[in-house]
Image (tube, rainbow, N blue to C red; front, top):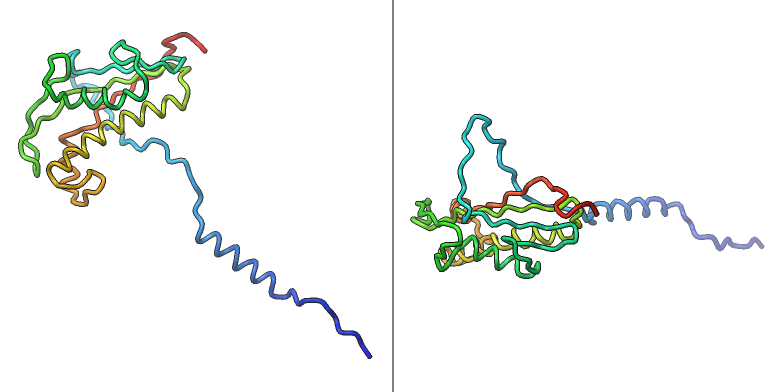
Length: 191
């Protein structure tokens, strides 16, 4: 009497493995670093005159090699940067040391006050990447919160929830991203 073989047929294992691999490739996503999403302005016309900007319209933000943050020459903590930038850009009490506000007529918003404020950011070459990203995040968050406030006031929803492109464009014009970033230097010496 012959013995029966106890082996399991593996002929279809390759097909199943291939199907599983295909399934995971199609359904999984790979996390990628997105970086800072910012649209750069077009290159300036070399023949255009350099616009004059009043001192009160510029908020100077410096980050040194030790990751210390100076705003208008005063050291502050990173947790204060967002509120400081918001107050600077919105100038809610019309202070003389904060930026001028200009009345503009914008489609779908009417006449609104638009800040002439510019945030000038300068980093030391020794600034850590973490601090650089934190500063960028706080400045971007300040602009986004101002846009959210205007969007809620006029359209009843947050800026990111707006679906009408005309409304998005109007709020973007009323609260522009006015962040100027200079080439890093050795502000505080080399690290």
